[in-house]
Length: 96
Image (tube, helix red, strand yellow):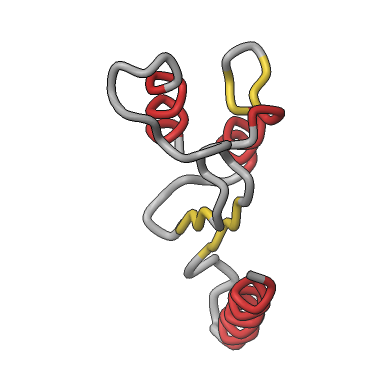
């Protein structure tokens, strides 16, 4: 898992370096890395705190790629339809 994050950080740094060489100072690509998005502790008043913060701080346009790095659903993944935990799980995935 750490090596994946390391690769994305390096790619982001390489992208930043190549963007600085351009005549324009506009952003050509943006990568947002989010982990543990399915953590029940990250939900407050029915809203995903981290996801809402990212939406407010980062422009979600064609230049933005959001990368979810695991733990999208706690604790055992998405249960079968009809299970009491299905709706919260599918809602979390739709929010992501």
